Length: 222
Image 1 (cartoon, rainbow, N blue to C red):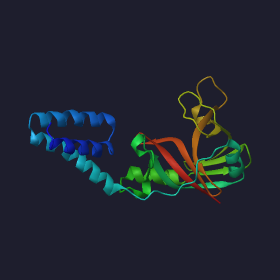
Image 2 (image 1 turned 60 degrees about the horizontal axis):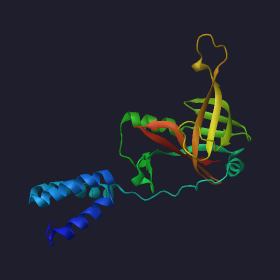
Image 3 (image 1 turned 180 degrees about the vertical axis):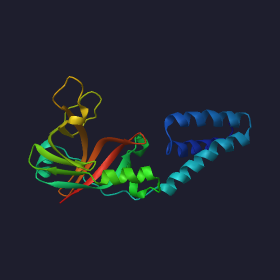
Image 4 (image 1 turned 90 degrees about the vertical axis):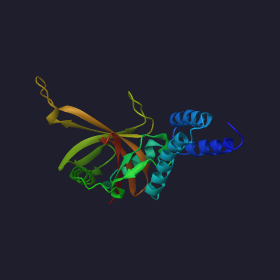
């Protein structure tokens, strides 16, 4: 590596580090060193070309970050806000699993250009979801074109592979889950992570998935 190529490589590696993960950086580092050592300029250009495309593509798709309710700190804070309130879904998103998206991890469906009928049906179904909190234990869940009377609890317990944070656990008897020899309906419990809340909005990570990403629902209260 000579004096002319060294600054170019250092700048290139810094650029790559800002947009991709460390495993990919290692691949490019090895490839670039090999190309320079063997004076293979064409290989060096080929290695850099997809990085430039990746950067340009990301910049083109960048959208303004939506203002969302803040993450709650205490269970009682959440309980005092949600009890006796009715919430309706207003926006649907998916949650990115990648650390590089941590600052803005949501992809909102109304920003996508996906016109597939499956996507439209999925969006319509989830936007019809409602939560009607009657008191500090009872809630009516309106979902899948039906209303279900349920009970709920808030806690920070971490079970199995759950993440930390405040959870909203909604439970109700589900007659469709009966098994032979069992006369009573099975009690089903669904866990939602409370990602944000204020007096008007509730942001939940749901148990649902879309394209292997968790579904996020933003609710407004009435």
